[in-house]
Image (cartoon, rainbow over the protein chains, first blue to last red):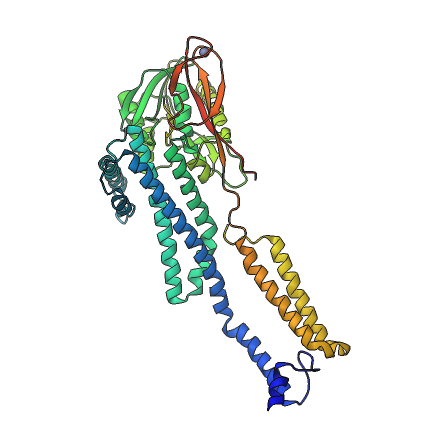
Length: 382
Length: 122
Ligand SMILES: [Zn+2]
C-alpha cells in the first residue's frame, strides 16, 4: 500500500503518460483524463466568467474611485460659497441622485414642448439648489457649480449602472452579462474619465473645447454693446462687409449654454423674417482618425441639444425659408469637455475667416445675417 | 485601459507555455529522458505556473500610467498696441477679461486666449 501511494505521487520511470499495466499508472492516466475533461467541459465557463468578472470588478473599483473623488470635488467647490454650519455633504450627496424622466413619445404630438418644459424644470431646480446651498456664489460661480454637479452626477450614474450589472451578473452567474459589460468597458471608462477631467476644468473656470462657438461669437462682438435677447443669451450688432450681422452667444464667463434656439427665433421674428442667412458655429464630435481642430462646413442646425432648441431654429428657418449654414470644428468628447486646446483656439480664427468669406459670397450688401455661437461659454467673456 | 495587456507580457507568457508543452512531449516520447521524467514534469508545471502568473499580473501593470498633465496658458493682448504676452493660467482668468492698463502704451490690456498644450504624447 505504501509503495502504491509513493508510486502514484512520483511515477518513476513511466514518463508523463506511461503505458503499462501497473495499477497506479492506470489510475494516474484516468486522473489526468478526468482532470483535462473537467477543465475543458465543466469548468470552462466558470473560468471564463471568472476572468470577465475580474475585469468588470476592477473597472467598478476604478469607477467608484472616480465617482467618490468627483463628489469630494463638488463638495469642495460648494463649500467655498456655502454658509457656515450647513450640512453641505448630505445635501449634495442626496442631490447627486436627482433624475429627470423623459416625456412619453408614444404619442409624439408636442413632445418637444413637453421636453423643453421638463428641461426648464430641471434647470430651475439646479439653479434653486445651488442658490440655496451656495448663496455666496456670484452668477458665473453658480453656473460653474451647476456644471461641476452635473459632472459628479454623470459619474455617479455611470458607477451605479456598472455596479448594478456586476452584481446582477454575480447573482445570476450569467456569462453573457459579464461579456457584454466587459466589451463596453473601454468606451465607458473613456467617458467616465472625460467627465472626471471635465470637472477639474469646470472648477478652475477654464474654457472648454465646447466653448468654440461662444469664442468665435465673442471675438466678433468684443467691445460692442450687448443686449440680453433670450435666457442667458447676449446679442450684438456688427457690420461685416456692409451686411448687418447679429452675433449671439451664451452670457459668459460662467458655464452656461442658454437658449440659442429661442434667441434665433426671437431675432428672426423681430425682423419679420427678413434674414438672408443663419450661420451656426459649434463643436462637433470627430471620428477616430480625423484631426482635432479641423474646420468643416455643411448645412443644418449645428447644435447638440436634446431637441427643443434645434427644433426652434429649424422651424423658424423653414417658416421664412432662411438658409442654415453650419460650420463646425472637430474634437472628441474628452477634448470638448476639458480645457480648450491650442488647435481649437486656432480653429476659431479659421472659422471667422470662413464666415466672412461666406457672407461676402452668399449674401448681398445690406442683407441681415445671424451668427450663432453654440456651446458652453465657461471661461469666455464677451 | 482595463483589458490592454502589454504585448511583451503576453509573448513571455505564451513562450513559457510552449516551453512547458515541449518538455511534456519530450518526457513522453524520448526514451533516454524517461529517467528524469519527474524532474521534467515539475519543471514543466513550474513553467506553466510562471506563464499564468505573468498573464494575470502583467495585465494589471497597464492602468493608465499617463496622467493627462496639461499646461494651460493665458495670452494677454492690448487694445491699443500689438503687445503679446503669455503666462500660466491663474484662477479667475477668462477670455476677454480686462486686466488693467497696458505696460507699453495707454491702452487697456485684456486676455486674448486661454488654451492647453498637452504634454501627453500620442
Ligand atoms: Zn498696449
